[in-house]
Length: 141
Image 1 (tube, rainbow, N blue to C red):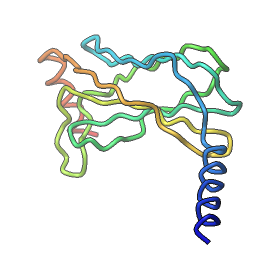
Image 2: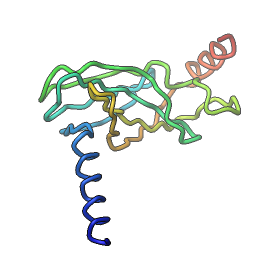
Image 3: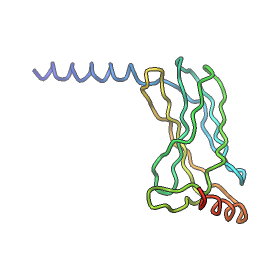
Image 4: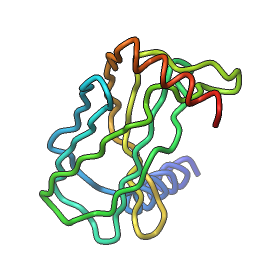
């Protein structure tokens, strides 16, 4: 009976793994230029119908959807400029996120199964003028 249970578990893991989105990333990085955060990555192999969802976390460590980019095929470079990193509300308490952000990619296959990339962090250095203006804009959203 125990052998049957072990075999069933192995089959379940094998089947579940077969449906996971298999993508290799050659690199995944983020950097701040003082006004926005640039996120860049390069894919290795990509299945057809793949899309990348960029997610960002602030001080509350809760990842939130930022943008979707469609797959261009294997061995392609991608970039996304996050112009709204600073000034976004962080969590349910309504505080404004500070200067450190964590990003990850949610890799969604054509069958809607998803996996996640590793996370990367970036310190967003914003001038005090831009910081004040960002806070004023956020108050009126």
